[in-house]
Length: 269
Image (cartoon, rainbow, N blue to C red; front, side, top):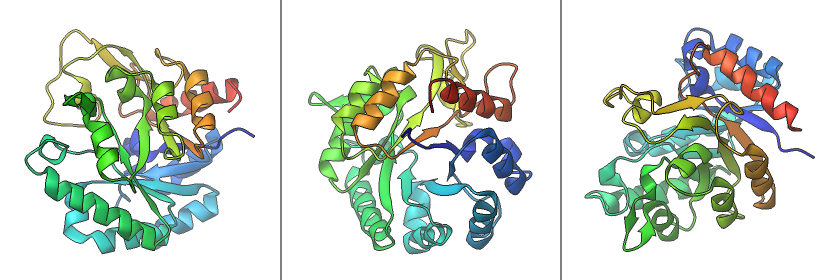
């Protein structure tokens, strides 16, 4: 049986911010089984839960950040527990909040506390990487230090950023066998470029001028998804999540979502 496919709603945030229910219905019609949220677009937890139930999508997971965790951890987890998510993930950590950073000791405590708070509601807390966690301290990647230091933290490996960081995504998924319930499927072309973080929605990032790096819908870029998915199955993954932070050239976000889903269907998913 093939793994179910979800999509990170951030991928189609331009549409979701205008009409969340209509967007979710379109995603379901494309063949997506579930969704991962990154905010609720001014809707209550009850409203989002009802939308997903009516449409037939699994509200699988949600991204959050350390600012929201520190502001109201219990309320944040309770909101997503009401929706019914199985996973929450820390989407991003600033340089100060990463291993070796000035605020790492506090961040480590906050992440561990979030793991415990999530567990009270039957939710597993995960970490969603980018490429910058593949810098090293004393020969170890920051990402590995993070997981070694907080053993209760699960992985949400983003396969694009694993490869940009210099590792083979399939191998890295297998490294975390039993700890990788969900994997992000993300495609790209090119190599590291100054525009990378602008493409994922960081307004402070500086764009380059040569287009050295670009995000693409799943199957359009350089990733070996059959190998990645095979590794995810072997590693005990339960779900695959499509994410594309900015659309491919000359495509809308929803067109990219459809093309990603069609590609995965073409290889048996």
